Length: 168
Image (spheres, rainbow, N blue to C red):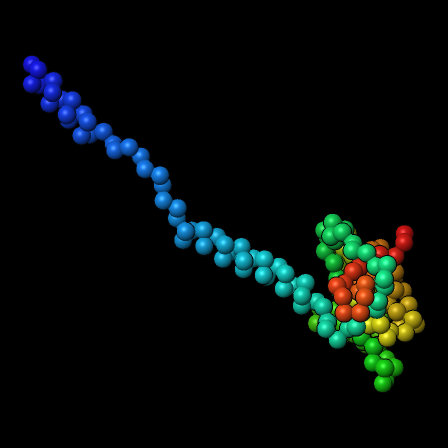
């Protein structure tokens, strides 16, 4: 009987699992996830970059302050306003479309406002833009029903950009 008991304990120890080892870190799935996140953030950030126009020389406002992004939850429309000093005329650039006058901008603003009621209009105007031209754009925004208008400025020549919201 003793022989049978020794054999059964030996069989039990052989059938038991060996002690667990620390699991190995799998790097391939981590790289896959990081690449997906990288592509996602690059595609999101490229829409903001594409809306800016390098030809616009923003005005300097030493008291310009950064506006929080929580106001732009519903989206925003970047309006680039260029001024040609030779012809003394301005052009309006919105999402790759060029408008010669502000009246053509009203239907675009109304469509954007109907799609997202809480959107803001970010104006990036060249420092050479004449007041009369800027006033016509602000009148077009008012006619379209836009309530949130923000101006983009720089704090110093060649420095980082700041956004300034007019007082309510």
